[in-house]
Amino acid sequence: MLARQRQEVILDEVRRTGAVQVGELVQRLGVSDMTIRRDLDALARRGLVEKVYGGATSTIGNSTDEPGFEAKSVRQLTEKEAIAKLAADEIQPGTAIGMSAGTTTWTLARQLDDIPDLTIVTNSVRVADALQQRGRVDRTVVLTGGVRTPSDALVGPVAVQSLRSLHLDLVFLGVHGMAPRAGFTTPNLNESETNRAFAEAAGRLVVVADSSKWSTVGISTIVDFDEVDLLISDEGLPPDARELLGEHVELLLAEQRSTEEDE
Image 1 (tube, rainbow, N blue to C red):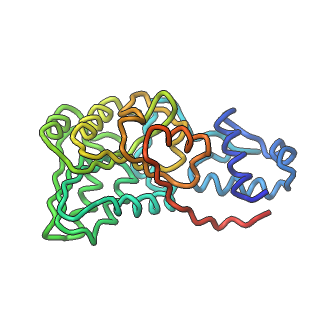
Image 2 (image 1 turned 120 degrees about the horizontal axis):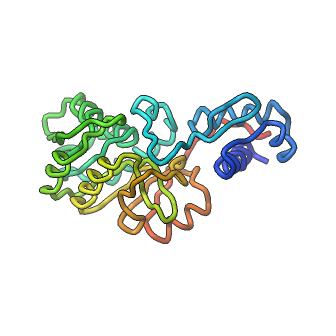
């Protein structure tokens, strides 16, 4: 069994039961103790599990847990870069686009140097800073007002009112989780309302979300699967998720480069 296949089995078990033990995985997968520990290390580096003594636990908290920007920015770096490159290909010169707050949209903001004459509306201080640092004179960056959240989003009535008067060609939406029945979700009620305003302003709505977001559910639904035009994720998205999502939304999967060796 390939390293990636083992890690998918381990991750599925963690998501199903909340925790795994090294000894049990050794018996189930028929590999050495050290191999399982390497697999857990790889999953932990991607932010998919939290290593504990003798095994690992789920990183998924309750529906109102909201990690800060710094905590999220070190998770799934390779996947976010690949997703951002695909997302940048969707942008045409001379268009008006929206970018919600989030580390994936922030990664996308750093990929836009070669696209001229853009107007970009965002409710993220981090995204606005990344765009302004590029110094393009043919770029207009509009930052909504609002109350700042732990993830550095500006939310609330001021942000919502700003967005409701706009008509954007394309909106990129970052999400906390995606799951059957719940759709695309966030742990912050105010952020949900602000992101819904982004969605309503979009001529075309694109969600950018790495595969670790699958089966994660925040307290509030932003939009249902059917309301999204395109979802850009990565190859780590499980087959059942691909099948379900593909029934509702156009799906693009970014390639991942794995350095894991076969056992």
